[in-house]
Image (cartoon, rainbow over all chains, first blue to last red; front, side, top):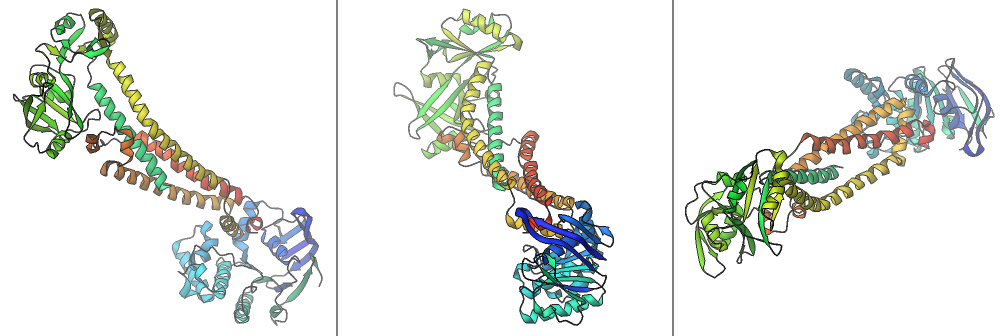
Length: 219
Length: 358
């Protein structure tokens, strides 16, 4: 389903983030990319989401060469297929929980009824119904994370990418996140998790743990 | 932005009202005025000279006018006295409208009435003549209109009373006003009058217009300064916006792109946001300026334009808003603000989402 073929990414000042990586992710899998900060995990997620383009090589998602298509179409692809949970959640502080969650749907011009129905579903699924009108800056870390996950799920994407989702959470909240992951996995979503949190390495429902080091796949 | 629009709008509203008032004054002037001079100083003229003027072909009417200023010591104020003759037609519409002034009576503007009342003159006023004797005139009526920029401290009386106060002889008048049937001939007739009255100053309406415009331009210079300062402030703010978004705004656009928004979606949103903010600011600014200028009579700003003449503090700015002024204010604010919102967003939105979030 997702393939990185001989993919490299070199940032400005010749910083090699990824060095000729070949990797494949199958549909419905939950894969953990592990490695220290700067190892290249986040770059793999950004490439799959089409947020950046590879310097060399190709990125294929559902047989589509997303590394070769124009920005306009990458946005549409992301809108339809990808749910991204960022390390710092990347919520817009001046908006409420509901407004943040609905952001991916704004360009789709859906009806109010459709928007309401989708919003209620995710609010319920991630247990943040009572916070829907609260400004996100007033939320706790765990609530912010649930909002970010709800936002990543509002368009029911087939692929969920999560970059260090528990980096800012305590152990209790991290365990809550594992429950959410389990739920998403049961919905047959493809989930790719970039983390260096050992909590995820031994989970029985994880399909594969891949070690990334210095921009290369080690195991 | 609302305050800047309000300041700009106030400036333009006051400026337009003044201009319109000056035009009214100029239009009420006769085509030609003949003022006698001695040693290059204005002096009186014999009213019988009117007949000489009327003998010139093309002159439709000539009127001997009696007018002048009176210094009111108690109030430290200067009144403008206009004399009128019951059987004459004047170029000044106010004089024409003020008929039936009784003997030893006068019509006064609201400003004069207020000033006299402060010195307990409620029914009459005692004018002190040059020889120290007193001329008492009863206040017959208060003039309704007070929007005379030139001099709102106005008194209208019969020519005889005015002559007595100014100590003119029977045949002495202040000047002669001349109307010309064909306006194209004004300059030609003025030239003839100069030959006829070699010692007199012959002023045509256009000369007065130039003089008024000079006065207006001098006063509007202050306004122009405010206008330019406001305008530059506005552009500095705009430039600040155009020269780059802050890190939070860049991050927000990055988030939206990462969530699947296209460049067009981001620009659409920013356009509507900019349009909404600038339109609301524009409307609020206009309303604030409207209230400030027409309801509160533009305190502080008005003083820059008018003389520091105490009586003029009661001058009310005449309502004068035209489509051009509103359109000018609109184009100086709304499209510029929208452009300043959209352009930097476009620059950021075309970068990779990953780059703008870093």
